[in-house]
Image (tube, rainbow, N blue to C red; front, side, top):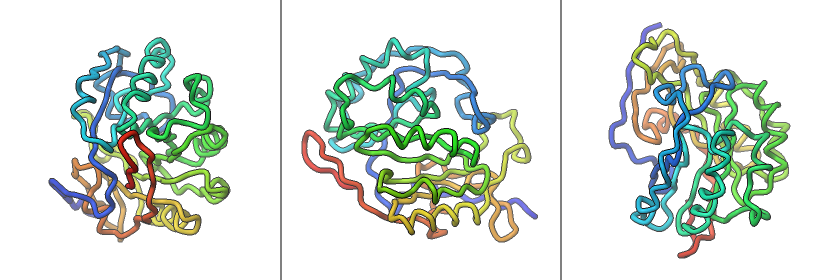
Length: 264
């Protein structure tokens, strides 16, 4: 097999997910599972509180999707002393949508704010799952958490995962998939773990059967398709190469925000 590089500079996906922004009050975390081997946070090995940068949030347009603590984990234990203030800010900026992705599904319940009840209208909780082991470990705990918006992030997808037993009862809105990517200069492409088209297609079909939104965001740097290895170098949130495989399943998601309804 040969390596085939693909690019999608300045690409705007057909599946609109809203304008993206990033908010990193703290950085750094600990590797806790298989997905962490080549994590892009490897350049931030030590936990560090950076500050809340509220002025940055004030500049964002209504309905902007803000990805939170992507260089750490929102429910990372060392952040416990800072998280209550983060929740206050998230609630205050109810004109924005905050996407919180975590591996700590077992810590979510104890770390929610006192006024959470059934969740904030402007918060998406998303749990990361990379293989069947982590799916059976994390998803049942996540399913029990009350939230207005719950997603799954299969990133990086390391094997074929059967989610059928988890997807009933209309408790989840969206599943996103990414292949593993190279972030360190010390990592060779050959060291990355592959992601296969058949695995992604299987997830897409499961989502379609349950009317769950599915987004194949990016193929990663070792994607196997038709017996060829593709290196998806897209730096965009949603890769054109992944989009052109036509595996996405669209289902609108409605957010009741401070300044009106937002549909993505």
